Every structure is written in C-alpha cells, then in structure tokens.
Length: 88
Image 1 (cartoon, rainbow, N blue to C red):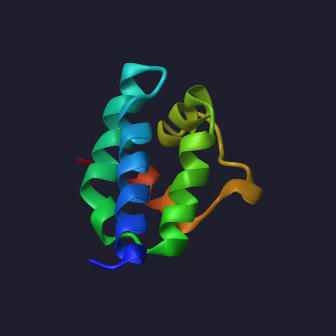
Image 2 (cartoon, rainbow, N blue to C red; image 1 turned 90 degrees about the horizontal axis):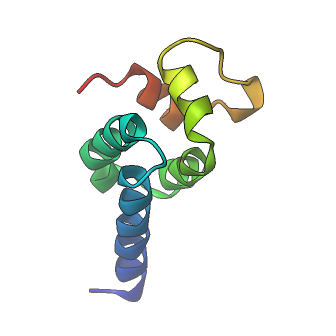
C-alpha cells in the first residue's frame, strides 16, 4: 500500500475512535453508528467535515440531531446534514 493510503486509513481509524468515544452515550451511538456506516466511503472533504463535527460539544450535536435547535449557518456542511438525516 502507498503511504497516502496508509495516512488516510489512519485518519479514518482516529476519526472512528473519536466518533464512538464521546462524552455521552447517546452521542457514542448516534455519531458512532453514522461514522461506522459511512467513513469507508468518505474522501478528503467529507473527512475534514467529520473532523470538524467530532470537535463540536456533545450537547450541541445532540440538540441539532434531535431538532431542538438549529445548526448555526456557518457550521453547516454536507456531512453534518447527512448525520442529522441519518436513521440507522
């Protein structure tokens, strides 16, 4: 395998770990299942968006996913929209 392939594989593993080891169990499940289902097909832009998503506070993410508060316009991206729409 190439070094670039190894780098992207390591990046995906780190992101998957971060998505499944959150501060609250609900986010472990919601974000973890989404990442598990989609991360293998994600390329650079989607991976960057997921990296941003895993940096958001759990309470904010949970509120957005549950529809309790709107996502700030400057934080919206295609991956976050897909996460909000995701139903495992």
